Amino acid sequence: MSLAPENLPATAGPTLPDCLRHWADTDGDRPAVTFADFATDRAGRRRTLTWKQLKERVDAVASALPVRAGDRVAVLCPQSADYVVAFLGAITAGAIAVPLFDPGLPGHAGRLAAVLTDCSPTAVITTAAAEDAVREFLAGLPGGEHVTVVAADKAGPVRAWPAPAPAPDDVAYLQYTSGSTRSPAGVVLTHENVLANVSQAVHGLGIAPTGTTVSWLPLFHDMGLVLGLITPLAMGMRSVLMDPLAFIERPVRWLELLGDHNGSWSAAPNFAFHYAASRVREEDRAKLRLDRVAAIVNGAEPINPGVLDRFHDTFAEAGYTPDKTRPAYGLAEATVFVTTGPGVPPRVTTFDRAALGAGTARTADDGLKLVACGVPVGQQVALVDPETGVALKDGSVGEIWVHGPNVGTGYWQKPLESTETFGARLTGDHGDLPAGPWLRTGDLGVRYGGEVYIAGRIKDLLIVDGRNHYPQDVEATAASADRDIRPGSVAAFAVEGTDTEAAVVVAEHRGHTALTTEDERALAVTIRRLVSDAHGLALRDVVLVPAGLVPRTSSGKIARSACRDRYLAGDYGKALVR
Image 1 (cartoon, rainbow, N blue to C red):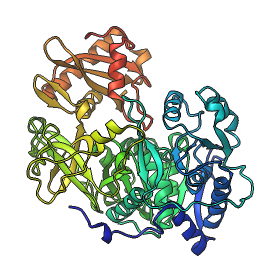
Image 2: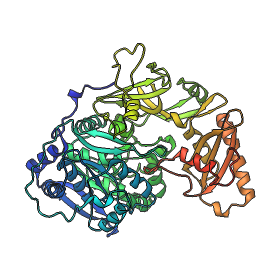
Image 3: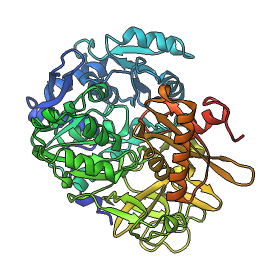
Image 4: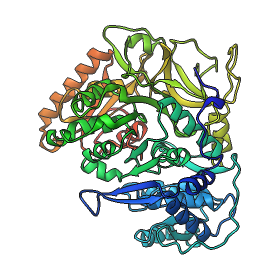
C-alpha cells in the first residue's frame, strides 16, 4: 500500500527557507520553538522564539557566514533553540548543513573528527559557550585552522546580503548515519526529499498541524531532526525541545512536557518506553495528563512487545491509551520515516521461529513475537531476495527495499556505495512496482496481514549450522536470565568456529563487581540453557561484563560488530574462539 504524493498534505513551501518565511510573514507572533532548559533550572526554564524572532536570528546567522552555494556548514551546537537557528541559518545562506554535536559530547570525539574530515566544512556554527572548545577541536584536524567559526547566539544584526533562492532539488543537508562498522557516510538529502517525508509522516500518523511536537531526541539524529525541527517548520507547528540528558536524568520531564500541550506528539526508541515505565515514580505519574497526547512514535530500534505492554499499563491511569503508540520503521537514507502504524493499538504477531529462520512467516502459539510497523505512505516498499533481486510474495522474509520521493540521492562523495545502496533494480516479474531505482536498507522484514514486520539486519543475522537466528531474539532470551542483566545491554554475534559459524553472547551485568567466579559460571550456564531451549542454538561463549562495556552507536543501538571486534581482540578477556 502507498499513497499518491499529490494526496499528501502540503507543506508551507517547496524549500525549508520558504517554509520559515511563510510562517514569519503570516503568523509571526505565534511561538515557534520552545526549549525547556533543565540544566540551569530543575523545573525547566522555558525559552521561546516566535516565528518572526526565529527568522530574524536565522537571517543574522546566514548573513554572517562567508559561504557559497554547495559549501558545507557543520552545526556543532549543544541541544537548544540555538541549534535550530544554526541549522536553518546554514541552509538559508545557501550552504549544505551538516547537523552534528558539540565536542563536549562524551565518547564521540572520534566520530566527530571523522565526519568533519569527510564533509570538509567551510564554516562551523556553534554557541558562544562552546566556541573555545570548538576552535580547539578544529585545530587538531587537517586544515581546521582555516574553518570559520560563527556563534549562533552572538551573530550581529542582519546585514544585507544576496540571499540565495534554493530550488527544491538543491541539497539541504547531509545526515550522517550512526553505523559503527564503516567510515561515516553522509546521506545527501534535498529540500524535496525532506518535505516529501514530512508530508508522508504527518499523513501516515494522522497528525493535526495544530498539534505540538515534543522531543528530547538529539537534533543531530534523523528522527530528532525531522520530528523536533523540520516537521514543525514545514507544517507551522510549535516545537518543544529538551536535552537528551534531561530525559535520562528524569524521564518524567518528557511526559510532563507532552501533557502541557493538547494534541502533542513525539517519537522515541523502544528503550525510552522501557526507561520511562521503570523510572517514573507513582506520585509523579498521578500528575501526568497523557490524555492530551495525540501519538508517540516507537522506532529506530527493534520494538519489544513486553515493553509496550508495560508502558501502556504504567501510564493508563494518566490517560495514555495503547492506540497512541505508533510503531514505525525508517532509516536516514529515506530521510527517516518509511512505515507508520495507524491509530489503533499495536498489532503483535507470534511467528514460528524455525519457519521465520527458513524465510517464511507462519504464525504459532509459541515463538517469536514481532510488532507490526504499519504501512508505507506516499512511497513503496518491496520485500526482495537480496541475492537475486526478485520481489517476494507477502509472507516471505526478504530485504526491505524502498522507492519514493523521500529517498536521498546517495552518500556524500561515495559513488560506489551510493550506487550499491540507492541504485538497486528489481529483476524478473515485479508487477506494478517500478524496476528502479530502489534503496536497499540492509534490513530483513516480512509483509504479513498487510503490515510490515522487521526481522533484523542482514549483516547481524546469526547463521549457525545452516539455520538463521535473529540476534535481538537471542539477546532478549539471554537478558531474561537475571534481573541485573538489562534488556538492551546484550550483544549476540557470530564468530568463525572450527567447522561453521559459532554464536557468542556478551551481556552487561549491573552487579558485576560483586559476582564471584562461581556466580559468573552459574549465570553463563543459565544463559546457555535458556538460549538452547528457546532457539535450539548452542552458544560457544557467554561473557559477562560491567555496565557500559557493550559498545553502542551514537544513537544508542547495540553495535554488534564493534562488540565482536572487542571480543576477538581480547578486550573482554581471552576469547574462546579465534
